[in-house]
Image (cartoon, rainbow, N blue to C red; front, side, top):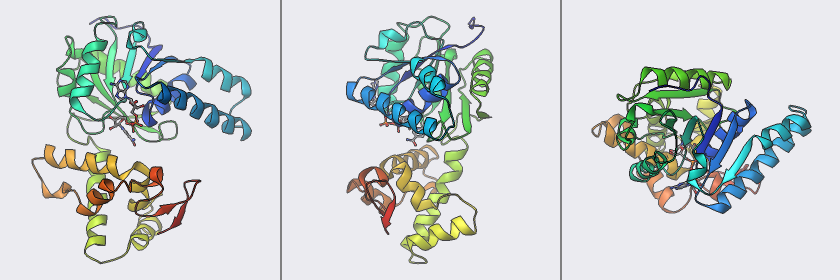
Length: 296
Ligand code: NAI
């Protein structure tokens, strides 16, 4: 496939947590960004959240008012997938469901040019299976940002077995231009970070379940001795117990039920009870309106 000389026009599918953050990163780097979501409220929420984030950055004198205006004018929010037709690179960040992602990608392929690169921000699905739904699977690749995307330096780039070398090269140079650190990983469950993180959460949950230490003690130990910025339970509450549990379950199954990645009933029950963490005000800890821990 013939690639564009530079990647300038970016499409983002899904204006939730990750899509909004990735849009901010690309727009800050000067790209023209079009954000698509099926849910109009999600689009409005994303636009308002960006306004709030950028206003705070101006107040802290991290960016100028002109930079804020430039970033905002670089982003357009749309409710029709066809509007992504002139993009060079599309990054999908919708619900973590293979068949839904495949459906969106195969529809998208009808609108974009033959050279548009199609990427998924999936945390745990195989890029090969997403690529397999495309007429041109060699244009498909994984670009995995971490939450919050504007602050987290690392981006994992995951070529599938079908991905062309040119697509990989172009994506790596684009992400570097966005001032991120790239780690290329093979298309395996959890890639690098989410795979290493499974036993981190899993063993912490087992230590708690076996009554070896309580939750604040485990978090304190790992922060003060382990040097982690957040303890495992604070981190699970930050990510969301629903999201975190689903990733663990997917990685566990994908590794042929290897016990190293076994999910925890403690987390499953919290997720079922809608004790998802910060976003619902209750998880391993209770949270106040400002998202700060109010009690264990
Ligand atoms: P989210 O739930 O915050 O946002 C998803 C958005 O996609 C919603 O606004 C929803 O309206 C929209 N959407 C759903 N179906 C759609 C469709 N068919 N077409 C267009 N829009 C649609 O989800 P989040 O957390 O941003 O995750 C998105 C992806 O990023 C998932 O694949 C997830 O595994 C991955 N990811 C999530 C991280 C996290 O910490 N939340 C970190 C890294 C990757």
